[in-house]
Length: 292
Image (cartoon, rainbow, N blue to C red; front, side, top):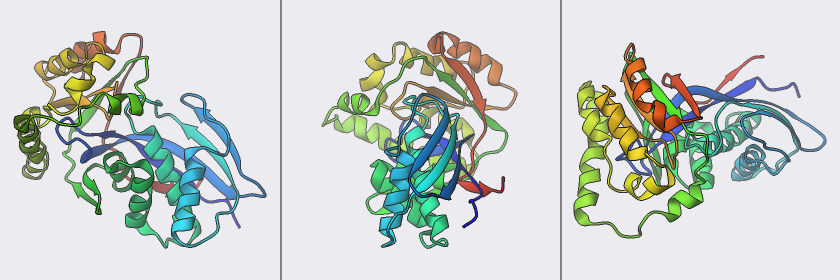
């Protein structure tokens, strides 16, 4: 069998503030994977962090995808380049799982399709809001049970400014910080604002996103894990961002801005990123294949 084309899977941001575990967006920063059948599993990795061994998430996703199809997984040689920061709230684990399931789909002749890739990867990941944009691209609303993902319109002429601190916030730690019960008024607050996201994107009324991104369900409870994060969010909005929110479990702060207005928002987030990095990225596409 000939080697497959190179696979590209985007980084993603989950939650978008108010849409906890329901809304996400893809970024134009891509995990790259080359794969071919081999005598035994092998994994060559370069990029962010240090990942090794055949117990990685790409191989895991591949095995799960093959078993979903009733097929026996076979060994793969993987060559991986990953520019997505690890444990920073930019969907690095979702990208890896989607890559593995997408490989199973390709090697089975497309028997899963994108909907199947989403279903299998979301079950593995546990949360659909990172997986859905990695599969379908752009802005997506998603459920895990029943598995459902609906792409939303992507506005033109916008970019994401990302302030990425130098420390990690592991997802289990961020999850443990959340309460099991919240006041009814806070739940209603988030429900109303999460509904504003698709309404603003479909209508083109992007000024409504400044309110749509506000949250009372997760960001305030995790703020102690990310010093200065709430002030950074408000600072980005005051500097002219259309929306500002914590990416996934954090600590990355993401600000959606109109093209040409990046510099002011970057300046507002400078103190928060500290010794970390600042990136400016556009909307990403769902996973795709490209001949090498």
